[in-house]
Image (cartoon, rainbow, N blue to C red; front, side, top):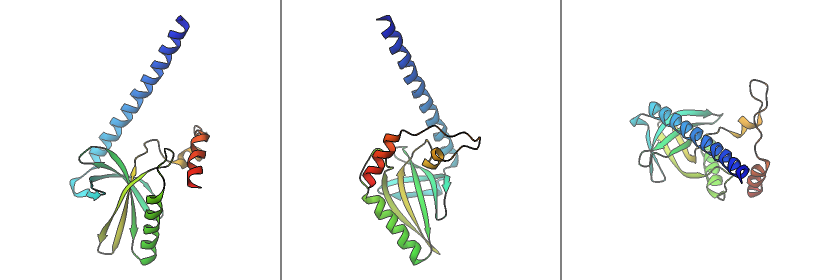
Length: 166
């Protein structure tokens, strides 16, 4: 019985430690968002008024920024796809349509809405995603700069997500 109590206390301490770690990470993200957000960067997607924060990723055709819902304080990732010609508009629309049709699944990032902003020389498609604070899949797949491999992802979660997509 004493062994069981010690075991349970150890597990509880581990859970509490992880909770404290996640809380601290949330505070860091919140402070970073507050420092980078400006009222002139407000946009509306799917009925949510969002304040655009700092850029967290960049690709060949798009940028990803953090955003905070001004009503709830919830944090989202906004993918911004710049379009300046007919082909890029068609590609952005196709991506938005595909993501909107994906089934809800715990191993697939959810898109909550989308919008379009018009500019003098084109438009910008805005895709609103849940924010995943632990980084990108590539961050887990590619070796770290130290030469060490990142911690392994649970294989079952990857396979479950892949099964839904196929």
